[in-house]
Amino acid sequence: MSHTSVFAAPFARSADRDFAVRCVLGLAPSGGADIGEVLAAVGDVKAKDAATWLSAWQALGERVARDAQDAAATGRADTARWASLRAANYLAVAVDAASAADDAERAASLFAAHRAAWDAFAADAGVRMSRIDVPLDGTTMPGYLFHADAAGPRPTIIFVNGSDGSISSLWGTGVAAALARGFHAYVFDGPGQQSLLFEHGVPFRPDWENVLAPVVDELASHRYVDEHHLIVWGISQAGYWVPRALSGEHRFAAAVVDPGVVDVSTSWTDHLPASLGRLLDEGKDAQFDRDMALGMRFSGDLASTWAFRARPVGRGGYAAVIRRIREFALTDAEAARIDTPLLITSPEGEQFWPGQSERLAAMTPEVSHVLRFTAAEGADGHCEPLARTLVHERVLDWLSATIRD
Image: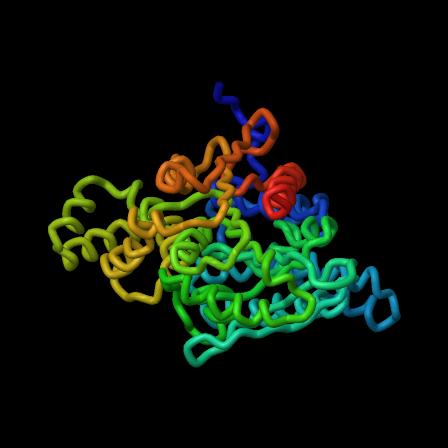
């Protein structure tokens, strides 16, 4: 039976912004947000007012960052720690808003502020942290290994972010819960993500087996990491990257995707008018680009979403972007090579890749297990933003049992 979400009343006056608010609110149990200050900051922003939306998040993030700096200067370490994490998460939303406004200079400035707040938190998160940066094709993926409060080598979860998730959000998306269960947790920026995008202009790439292999190489040699119990947990668009990586990287003891993604491009193309889809299929890219440009002029929201989503793809014209993103699709041959136990979440009301968790499970029947979340539990929607505690309980229970067997 399908249920209507118990959180049907929106937190913001557009679907995209409502989802952004839900994602931030979901970080509150781990100290990554304060519900009242978030809702107070954005509650009055009008649906079409992109400038005020951006300013609201920037003002909130900068105010909380100043609180963190003042606390650090006066020796109030706990206050500084958690204010830094909240500031990093709020500023991350401002970065996304600036990207959607196609304001590269402001996005870069806000990203620098976001990263400074994150680094302040990571350096004093209340647990030991080791910087482990990983070389990749002439650049470096910055990484942070957080140590559980336990002696000796430990099972370690590598968290792989999605297309636009901030590294700071991973603390509440799974890191804090993993540490509490005795797992080490590693987070990093991959191609097209965060620092690699904003500071180095490195775009997305589909072949994540070649991204995760050097990460595994680095972690497997670390004296506090149990190389026989490495786990990878992919979030959002990493629901594609992780299975693709598992098709060529077989050193993981277990894997999680939240949710499963077989074809990234459907979240781009399913909403295209049929006439535009035919132009793409017929190779009429110039006509497709012309008609898309016309549509963008009549929809500011569409233009903003495109500017935000297209930037990390690294291609120019509209057709070129979609042709590139169509390369991010798991083939049957790749799926057949996956031999890692794989947990696939399937939230009711998945709005970006509906039905793809089940498709991934059908492609990997011998290794996969589907974990469903429902609206009746308050756990509906992409990545279950308002039910992270429930997600952590179920996922970490499965991981603990799987690596023990």
